Length: 218
Image (cartoon, rainbow, N blue to C red; front, top):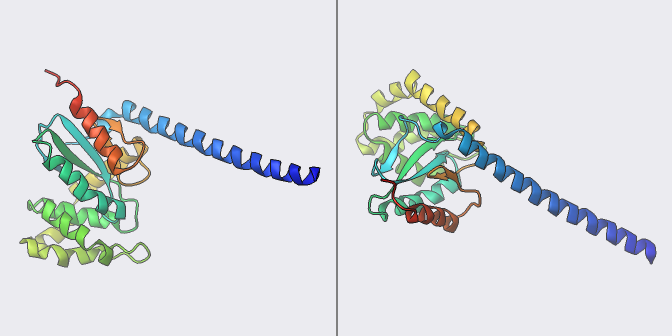
């Protein structure tokens, strides 16, 4: 009997240690991300980044975004709704975190569309059809070209632009900033420089509301 209780007690201790260790790891990870945001403020927003909403809005949501990410697709209408309902007080700045295979190519296609002022139309069509081209085991981002042709895009011109050094440089900068800010999953959100450490729609809305509630700086 004593031996049995010893085994049970040992197992319980292992489980407790694992849970405690996991919580400590999470807390330390959150501290690392928060510290990175404070240390690398210049890495949050770049002049080349797409902006949705009022460019002069006093609250900025920075989203590190992967076109192939299902969660990014799910969050897109949520974030867009927050911006649209803010009476021009909130803007969205898109940064790229191409963590899935093929996502870097998808980013280049979207950026080529942006050069023809077709970015948001192209993005929404790509997200709508994400299951068709972004299968993680066999992605085919080239299918995006057919999806966005209906936006009035000059596809031939955009295909040439997608391979340009400027777009490649833009993507490399975003990846470097993603690493500096310790973003390792998508979507990764920052609201006026504060990282969203507890992931979820209510948590994001609460972080935005807290930023809006702060007195406006003259």
